[in-house]
Image (cartoon, rainbow, N blue to C red; front, side):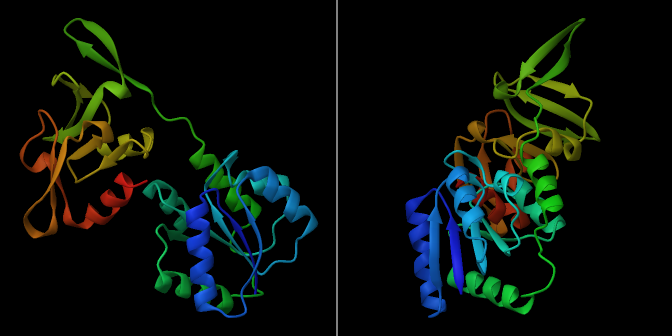
Length: 251
């Protein structure tokens, strides 16, 4: 099996190579590339590969740009250490992905999947890749307009600790502890804000990563966050979101 690895983190590439060679004796690592430019140049000259493992962020850009520069017919497995938003996009577009750090069992399942569908229509078509690229390179909201008395004030997202909802109303919690009503639901805010900096910890709360001062274990496998002016259930990471929350912190 001829494999190309596109990854700009040397340790991650070495870890993946080690696992691949452990799983399959016939693995041939044809090329390791750490940039969009190098990958495009190689793929234009060497199109005959069996499988490509591709990280999202590379030394000189986002790996989806490779699909714009060259026609890839080889099945692609995306690897990512970040962002549940990107993962949702991959699922919608039928792209396979592996979360870092990659485990041997997950890698084995991925190899089994690609062997099962080998020769069928390529899962990551150019149209699908471009759609995901559009999602990942979109411009997120950078400020919110709020009413302060008779005046209107602009609050940059960097000055926001969290968004919360109470009695069907949404509020912005600024770094100084003041709350302001906003005309968005938390579902809408999730799509407006960068998933690199904001995370929905439960049904009521969306938090900024810089606002988290301390994380502690809580009842029933949940986590309790120490965020100024955020108390009770508003500061609890729900059990079903704990694993995604940990991955978000570790991106």
